[in-house]
Image 1: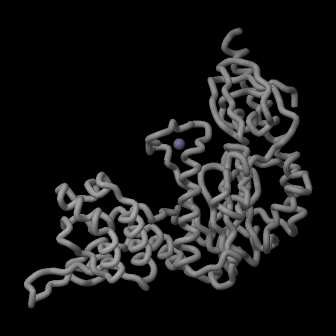
Image 2: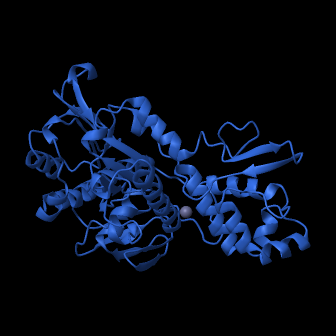
Image 3: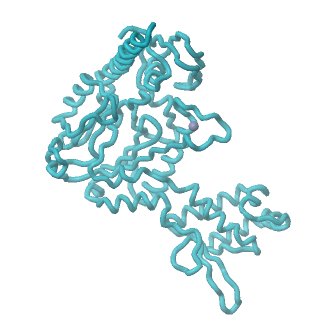
Length: 404
Ligand SMILES: [Zn+2]
């Protein structure tokens, strides 16, 4: 085969791959049970964007009803579809000023990418990584519990949690009380959860988790810190530290700055007393090596904080993936999650059942999906479930062989 033939073949082949993916998507969007899940409140006032080549090929589109939107999805089968967190009087007007914004939902995007970080115990998977997803799910769970519910004070009914369909989570708050929040206030909520203004230690006595006080009568310092009954970050740091002390072994204490064996021994014997002291706000005890509590606070902050993709929250004209639509780089559903502790993305967000199809692998593949382990050799014909075929085709790791 000469070069021209090759390019010709690959072009029609690419079209065939896309045709396959879109036919599966179109079927997904035609089914009643899937349509029921994609229900958008105030749909007639939302701006939409969709894309096949890119995430957004076009925007400024609007729909008069959810049904009209379902028909659009079934007919065009876009790989990506997103809608405005804002509600407009004229959602399809262009430029933006002509839309006349009426309100904006509060949305947090936890688009966590841990791919550059190493898993210490497991191997990262480039196609889709269950370990990265596990960590993203834990972060989302902590974000909802610690910040959205505890500190921002929303109730569970106020929020919708959606898997993004790829690597992270979207938290939607469609409550009236947030609809007029300024861009700046939204930014502040993100900064608060990211712990940006939280100072671990302060010698001047202004803020800071730990505060050093000079006692002139004793000519020494005491260190005061969070105590029982405190709120917000102080409460979080206190419970993290108590938990750490309760579970700590010799090596953990060493890592946290207690170096002398005699001090470690003393610490282990007096754990109960130490916990009692810090619950009373006294973060200096038994002449424990001076860095210990400071290190605890620093570690607590970095373990509790959650960084979100800020522009998604503060940009009042943002488009975000339609909940329960399909994500075009994985073929997984951006599914609504009831309980993050039980949620397993690579099982619960699977979109396509189907009878299975034949693929040709372009590299060797090993992954776990839908509780099944798949090990496929390079350059082989294989029969696989539809959800795996779609994922591999979208990732460029396999070609579909069946005629569409
Ligand atoms: Zn990974």
